[in-house]
Image 1 (spheres, one colour):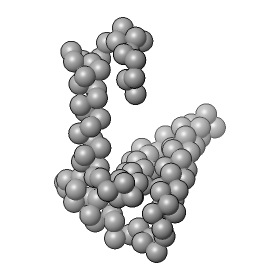
Image 2 (cartoon, rainbow, N blue to C red):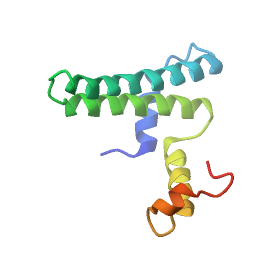
Image 3 (spheres, helix red, strand yellow):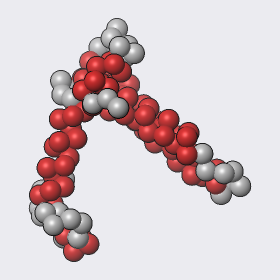
Length: 111
């Protein structure tokens, strides 16, 4: 296993650094959306009789992580920092674990 920081460092070498930061941001954004679409397609195919392809799902999740890394690089942050901020947000939102009540009635400004 590798850390988020190591993953991001290794994945960075496959980014197109000839793009401007704005182009890399858009590339990451479009890539995130297209990878989610590919995941949707895996689930949609089940309704057509195809078996669910878990290996393909895991590959697409990896592609999502790659684009998250690219977006993080554009904003001079790390996947590790993003993950920590998310855990802190969830800790504040659900201090005792998930609660349907707290989910339905979030504090103003809780994004």
